[in-house]
Structures are given as structure tokens and as C-alpha cells.
Amino acid sequence: MGILLSVHRLIRVPGSPIAGVLMDRWGRKRFMIAGLVFAVIATSGYGLVQGFWPFLIMRVFWGVAWMCINISGMALVIDLSSSHNRGRYSGQYNTWVMIGLAAGPLLGGLLVDQVGFQKTMLLGGSITMIALLFAIFLIPKRVSKDGIPEDKFSVRGLYPSMQLLRTLPVDIWVIFFLFAITLFTGEGVALSTLSLRAQELFGTGLSLGNWQLGLASVGGILLGYRSLAAALASPFFGRFSDGQLGRFGVLLISLLIGALGFALLGLAENLLWMMIGLTLSAFSAGSNMAVLIAWLGDLAAESQRGSIMGLFATFGDLGSMSGPFIAYQLMGRISLQLIYIYCAGFFLLGAALLLLTRWPHYAGGGR
Image (cartoon, rainbow, N blue to C red; front, side, top):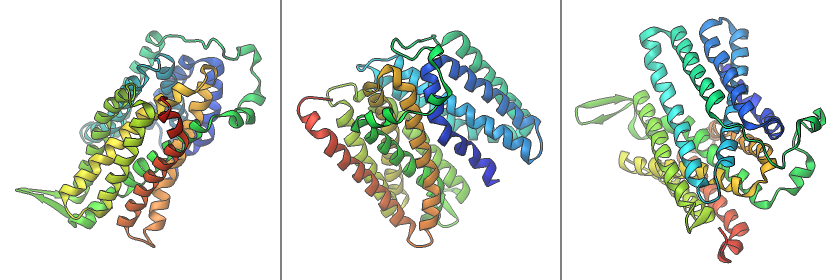
């Protein structure tokens, strides 16, 4: 089961940089369409195949699908926006992604209970087919003015060149690091341990007046609330970063909010303080993802945006993959509360790094 659940990430970590390079050569729309084709096959296949190996193949297909959809989606948002509205649009993009990630398990679980797993997956494949038609007919075909022509393509250039890596500005490496921190703490540590933290505080369940919620319900509600709060915060902070404070100012505030949120999650002794900490950490996650994508779009040359977005996605996957593993390894040695405090420390480290690299530019009137 562990292999089936994790294989899609194992595909994406080495594959995202390759997908990004190819996207700079072949265009965003082609990769979005290819990703949705793989998504239709994978989602429908879940309901049609049986046995470990066929299901594993469908999981690999889903890894390829999400890799293409995610990178091309972010690149399209960057391409079709400007520095004056990129934060707003990246925030709106993240909102819909988070709504989908939150609604999928909820609605999918309800449908499985009502009509069964096979019909639910086939319905999901049909809905994805509608998205594929939207991509074919509604996404504009955008060709980079200074991109590499298709006849110059070579297999040797599949991976981002060392020259590209050496010439990336320090700011872009800072963005990669901050994105890894955001997904390490949120999608990694919090997502995998929040139910355990609730168990420490509430035991086997939570009483709210005449309502008695079991631990599984409490964990599901907390995770759903976190996704919703992050989705609502993302467009607000993204749009805010288009204004006078700029990417630097909003991102610095967001990192400090994240540090406070995780500190409260670690120190909370009742539901109120846990919810405050969870809300702050969710706001920080939604803000970081919107502002980091917008800032990356501001900095990346048009002909390199796919390659850089591929690297960006890889750093995020490394963060979200390593979070649960490191958290569960540490829980045998230190308390879960202290792990959350360490997560707060990562946000403070990110804020310090941001100040060190960007404050002179920001103080001089830059964004």
C-alpha cells in the first residue's frame, strides 16, 4: 500500500525538471492536454483494473498527469499575467487547486459509500474528460518569443543544464527553499500529524455541547478547515503582493505568521488556541504559495519559465515527501509539540534568509 500511495511522487521528483524543459520547447498547452489525457486514463483505470501491478501502472500514469498539469498550470498563469496582477491570479489559481484537493476526498468518499469505488472512479474520469475538452478549446496556444525552436531539440538537453543552474539568481534559490519549507511543514508534517496532535489534546474524541465527535472526525474536520482557510487566504495575500508592500513585504509577513501559527499548534492546550494556530498556519501556506509563484514569474525569463517551474515543483515535492518521514522518525525521540516548534523555527529561518538576501533591494525601493 505504501508503494501505491507514494509512487506518483517518486515519478514527479526526477520527472518535473524534465517536463519543465520540454514545456519550454513544446509549449504549455500541449503539456496541459497531455497531463489531462493521462489523468483520464489513470482515474478511469482505477475503476477498471484489478491487482497490484495494473493499479501501480495507473498510479504512475497519475504521477505523470499531475506533473504535467501542475507545472503547465503554474506556467500558464505566469505567462498570461503581468507583474501588476500576477499575485492576484496566482492566488486565484491556488484557491481552485486547494478547493479541488479538499473536495475530492470528501465527495469521493461519499460517492464510494453510495455507488461504489468503480462507478466513482469512472465518474471522475468523465469529469476529467470535460476538463480535457476545456483545455483543448479554451486554453490559448502561447509561444515564447525567445523560446528554443522545436527543430533545435535534442535528448541531451532534456535535463536543466548546469549553465542554467549556475546562472539562476540567488532570489530564485531562496524561492525554492521557501517553497520546500512551506510544503514540508504544511503538506508534510501538519497533514500527517494533526490527528495525533488532536489526540494528545482531546483523547479519543471531542465534546461540543451535545455533539460527540470521534478522533477520525476531528482530524478530518481540522484538515478540511486548514485547506479551506488556505484557499481563502491565497487570493487575498496574492493580490496584496501586487501592491506597495510587494512580494518581499507580504512574504516576510506570511513567514512570521507561519512561525506563530506552528508555535501555537505546538503550545496549544485547548481547542481555541489550536484553531488559532491552525488558522494562522493555513493563512501562511496559502499566502506563500501564491506569492512565491508570482515572484518566480517576475524573475524568470520567459524562455526558461518551464524549466524553472519544473525545479520549483521538485523542491515542493521533496519538502512534502520528507515531512511525514522526518516527523515520524523524530516522534520516537522528541515530543510532537517540539516538532511543531521546530517547524516554527524553519519559518523564522526562511524569514531571516529573505531579509538577508532581499532587504537591501527592498529598502532601496524595490519590490
